[in-house]
Image 1: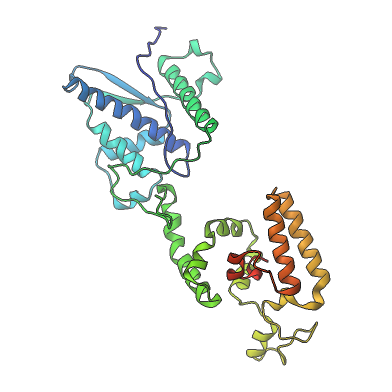
Image 2 (image 1 turned 30 degrees about the vertical axis):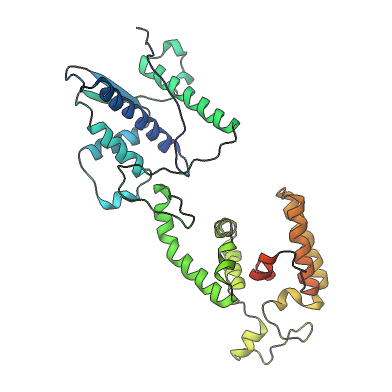
Length: 324
């Protein structure tokens, strides 16, 4: 087999969150196409029409989309497809190269079955590229790098931004569009219902709140929504709608509002058990000791005295039964 010669190589990190192998491969494709375009600019003249060149990619999905976009088969709906910004960039860069610059698919990880020297030159290049990508990733992790935010690519006509002004990855656009309106309506309702200020509602980490809710069973999710919205069938609500003859708690005789479910003086044993379970769960999650004590102490003060002594100004504004 004729040996290959590497004239130039490079590596780097792909951008965008969440990162996927599809997006990483697309960024690698952008890199080589940019290099070929810049090389022609550096030479000061276009490539000869007689020059033959082949680029390889081990992601067939990227290649299929690239061919479709080069043919001009496009629609606004496809802007919602995962990694659309990177794929339209690939198509635009590829269209600027001569027709005799071809692209072929190469199966990845062929070195799992064969020795490197037994592989074809394209397969060897694929192994080299994977190794370079691994080196770039390991170097970034060693330097403490985190996921890189998306940088707008000129070929993409539009991006969607989240509340923090960061670009939403095209793979998550449909999800955000589907949930943003009901989420916004729910937040507005909670703000009015709880009497929160704009500052209070923006201090809540809604993204972490959503991740926590996603782990609940359907019944618990339904319960948590009714709890935070003050829709539980407590005695005061039931009495108002004439379902109960009295609005009193059957344990202590005080008016039973949602908050009273936690504050009732006759529920001391349940409160102690509840705090012990909270502490146990926070330890299991390896929550930082100072944060764990902060949460448990705040809940204990609120449950037994309804006074938190400003342990958390933010939580006082939100309401402690919302954390309970």
